[in-house]
Image (cartoon, rainbow, N blue to C red; front, side):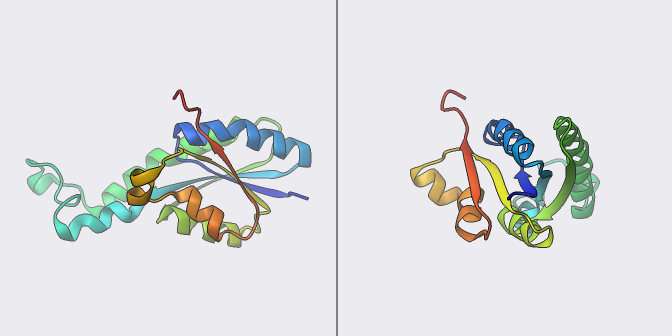
Length: 157
């Protein structure tokens, strides 16, 4: 039934809460787990307004370029994803790091890799915080073709 399970992760408590669910489903169906981390590049688009790209005062001429920051983020994310994929001992895993708007990248990955099920964490934001920040998991639930299982981080965390 499920041959390819997507596990999008950002290292948050919500993502970590989903790990055991991913493992149990993958073992039950002998499925491949795709461990995906998205480097959120929306932050780089703030540069025109002077927010993110201008950086903290004192950066001056030594400020890293957008491409250098992207490369640094990807360089940090790749070992994280590979290590996480290795934790699924006995389960075939495919680690992946992509960049872009997280929910759009996740939806594209689903289509490109014929994903049958998505299992992802959620931080459980409500009210104004959810309205202002949006929710990657909420957008994936609404827009993805395959079923999406969301696992909420423990309220105590």
